[in-house]
Image (tube, rainbow, N blue to C red; front, top):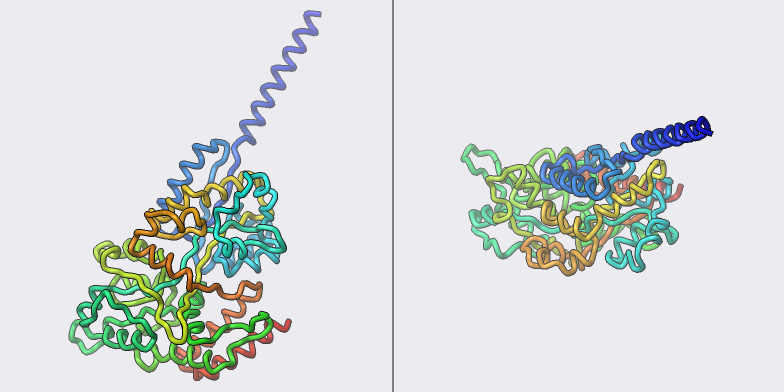
Amino acid sequence: MKKSTKWLLMSLVTVFILTAAVTLSFGKVTLRFSDWHMGEAHWLKALEEAKVIFEKQYPDIKITFEPVSYGEKETKYITASEAGQAPDVMHLHAYSLAAFIEKGYALDLTPFINKEKAGFLDAWYALPLTLCTYKGKVYAMPGDYMAQVLVRNTELFMKAGFDPAKPPVTWDEFLEYAQALTVDRDGDFKVDQWGFGMIGAKSPGFELRFSPFVWSFGADYLTEDMKHSALDTPEAAEAIKFFVSLYREYGVAPPGATAFGPFDVRTQLAQEKVAMNIGSGWTVPIVDSINPELGASQVLEYSAVPVKRKAITSAWLSAWIISPNSKHPREAWEWTKFITSKEMELKWFRDASVLSARQDVSGVSLEILEDKHAKVVAYELAFAKFVPQIKEWPEIIDAVTTAVQEGLIGVKTPEKALADAHKRINAILAR
C-alpha cells in the first residue's frame, strides 16, 4: 500500500512537472507583425510604445516587428503568402484588399467579430468597412482613413507675394501660383525652388496624387460597371495633358519626377525645394522628422485640392489583415483589435497625425476637430473618392502610371500614351 501510494505521488509529481514544462514551452505565443511605418522614426516609437502596453495586458503574447517598405509591401506579402509564411498581421493599402481577399491571403475575421459585444463594428464608418468586407464576411479591420489635400509652405508663399491664407482654388490658379513659386533663389541662373512636388514613380502613392486631377477634370478610370476603361474621353485626355504640362511645358516640378515617390517629394518639401505638394495628415510629422528646423507644424498649411469641373479628392484607407496561415489566429485577433481600438487610434493621431476610420474617434474627438491640419483632412473626406476596389486594380494603375511616365519623359504624347493605356486596361478587364 505504501509503495502504491509512493508510486502514485511520484506519478502525479511527474505529470505536474511535464505539464508545467509544456506550459512554459508553449504558453508564450510569438506574433509576427509587419508594417511599413516601422521605417519612420516617429511611427516606430509609437508602435514600440503600443507593443509594451499590449504585452503587459497579454503577458503570454510577444509581438515581433518585421519592417517592410511601403512600395514593396504587396510584392513581399504575396510572395510570403504563396509560400505559407506570411506575417501573422499585415498592414495594407486599401487598393490591395480585393486582390488579397480573393486570392485567399486574408483570414475571415467574422467569427472573432461575432464573439465581441453586440454592435462592435458600429464604431467604424460604413464606407471603410464596406471595403474590408467580401460576400458578407469581414476580412480586414480599417485603420487610417483620410482625404488628400493641398499642402503649401506659407513662408515661401509670402516671399512670392501671395497671401498665405489664400491658397489656389482652381487648377488654373494652381498653375499661376506654381509658376511664381518656381525660382532661382541663389542667383546662379538655375532654378532651385519649384512650385510643385510631383510623384511620378510607380508607387502606391502615385494614384493618391494623380487621381484628383483625373476626377476633377470630369474623367474616370473605369465605366460604372467596372468592366471597361473610361480613359477614352476628352476629359481624361485634358487631365493627363495638364498634369504632364506642369512638368514638361511649364517646368514647375523638379527634374526626375518619374523616379520620385512620396518620401522623395516630402524631402523636397522639408528642404524647401518645392512649395506645394499633395499630401494628407501624415505630411507634417514626416516632414518634421526630416527637417525639424523647418517648423512644419507652423509653416505648412492644408487646403482643398484645386478644382477644375468639380470638387473631388482621393480617399486613403489602410487596413489590417491576419494571414490564414497564422498558427495563432486568436492572439493575432487580439493584437489587431488592440491596434484598432479607440485608445490606440487616438494615440496614432497624437503621434503621427493620422485620422482614424473609427467615427467615435475622427468624428467626435476635439483633438482632431480643432487641430488646424486634421480638421481640413476630416472636412475633405466629404469630397473624397476611392479608386476602383477590384482585384485588377494594381494592373490597371500600373498601365496608367506607365502612360503618365511616357508623357513625362516625352517618348509619347500624352494622348498616345493614354490611348495605349486605355487598350491595355480593356485587355486586362477582358481576361
